[in-house]
Image (cartoon, rainbow, N blue to C red; front, side):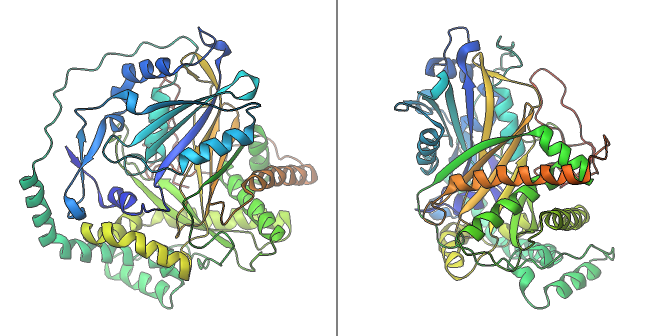
Length: 523
């Protein structure tokens, strides 16, 4: 039995009638390599039944006190039934990309049933070319980007032939916590909450100049420096650029609807740009997003004269093989160079601002997100967070959007014998983080994008995907102008959603192979 952390519980608290807090992904499969030439619901259920022990979050549900008096606990669900979680549907002809995206967006908008383990899998037939899609969503309180990738890979194989999976040991499910022990725990935490609030406040104060909204307040930078000196930390930290997010058409109160677009860019093109300009692949992603959002805002006559501010999730897992349930993440707040008109100058601006943000993140505590969540009692967070988020959406904005880059498998993988052609990750949109999120994942020589938006604020989500491709063409044209500098190692700046300590973070690996270790600092 494990209690949710303050950060995990915050992902529950943020949900409302207009906000769903699950992360998801859509895999597109070619079933021609499968033994039966297709992928069936029963095949997926059989696969899950055989490997469910490799993904502990999929068997656990929440148990907690009424009114959110304390953070809930994870318990094994004694009534767990895969039939409740695996669904099947068929698109009408012709089954093109936009039909698939609209169908997936409708599923993505629905919140998960908290009375069951917090995940769903949807098998979608009827795609053009004989393809099928598998959309999976898991609540963000249960997984982060790294653990989500690990769960995905546990269900995949390096060839059409399923690999042998060792049977799980016999384990007696833990009993559900009784009401009295949970009330006792809640009472004990209520006594220690003032101390925890003070500790979290002190820790967060050291990073005031890196926290959205707060960083824009007068004296935030001075207060952060003073707090660090009092704590005995006199290291000089890189100065961050202003983090005041401008108002845009996609920042404001969101609706309950979602729209979705997706596409891919060859990873070879991303690496070509990275080599040519001495930057990391993640810097290229941030440049692509800067250019795409600039094009979208210009087309809507809404381009601000200040840079957009993006929240970039970063994994801070500190050991291999650790907890597979819950979140171990922080967020790096970085400006996007949307205010720079010249493509070459825009790329240089992104490279320099990201370098400063990464250096600062590597030297900071990296716990401000958890600290902010831990400042408030569980009952207050559960009841007040939706209203506070709504109010923030109406009066201002924390950040303009979320940009996330998840490292994925490099070799082709298979599900139920069907080759996975692409995997498009999907994130959340909220009143505070903006009505659009851009997520990508590297897989088998491509960078697969998923763009999730609130259609009330972003009515043309497919244009964003088009702008990302146009931005890539723009960068390749710059490469043609300057010429490639040749093969060399990338600077020590890894992708986003990577862990904080060198040699302790691994990429999602091909099943059955040792994952490569990246000895790099966080992005």
